[in-house]
Image (tube, rainbow, N blue to C red; front, side, top):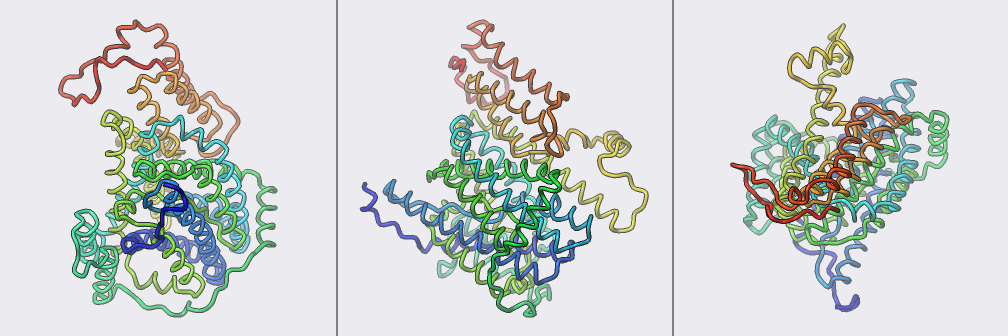
Length: 533
């Protein structure tokens, strides 16, 4: 079908349900970053609600415009309806910028304005790095097994998008369970509600009404006003100059932006697995450009293609849901309604939608790969569990210090690490796995999937690439470093050497016939020879 003959509708009724899911995701991010900037870093409301939030809205609008047009292009190219890629502020990278860039500057100088300037400078430079990912993104997508890319996303979905919101539901069960059962009924079970109302809207409305009755919601109109988005070129230049005067900050920026463009690549692959194909290089450039535009207008926080396209695809959304989110977020940002919504909608009412996104992504992954590759998905998930543990251990240590506990050894100190090990908590190993978890999960998922397929050279190549990344600190280290030959790097080299060399000398019959493992489901053809590739 020619590009001119297919009439793709940007808006469909099904966009309404998808809108509430994506809107909740973006809203929660904006609520969290606003609260941390205002109350932890002591930024005045004029910076938070007058600069950062409108700048983030401009970044979201810019990306939404591109991805809506891209959906229309894809629909006309393939002659069928497609679901536009979801887009917004990258949640993991947001926290890295908050506590790896903005926080250290504020704590060192007690200057909230300088911390914001450095933040937008870091955002702009990080956007350049993310956009450069387009140079290698298509190549990485071509050589990386789908199980590796989707498996590491499943890890993020399991622990951060699913588990954390579920705990928030259980912390406020009256509100949370009410919203959760509506989401399970309408979005997971896919049963209609009266009047065919979207389950996301009904869930948030029901939870908010209950919260109002219980006195858990508050109406705050103090922040309502007009906050036009303005370019802050002078502040941006000041922030970039500070970065180049303190180049150690690039040791935080570069690895996290490598993570960000790989996250984009993985999420585009997730969309393709759900049936919608988009050009990964264009998406990576869009995410980088959106981040840079947001920085010019005052937002330090990188944007990205969101995880969760399969969930919106399942809802049969078109492009209207992202257009709606961009419009509503912009309206709330430019007129100061974010603080109002922050007080009105309880987290427990919105959290079930995120749980649904996690469930949908993991379920879609299981259907998008061959059964034998579930082993690869499983190992790709595991580094994210370590990341979750290390994050929460850090939160516990900070909570103990802020509650007045004195003399506590620092997290990571030899004495505390030894004491944790005596209690069965392997802090050192979890820390190594947590550093660059998305890349580590992708690499090990790719190695396992390639071994299963008998593509030994590919598996060995990923192991050698991991050794290089480990040596220079992209993974398994706190920051970039000069090449080092530590234990993990040597371990990767041993793995790569085995996978590259042993298949060349192994007896042919050992490679042509697989071992049958008793009491294990066998998804492999035991007589299928390896590819030796």
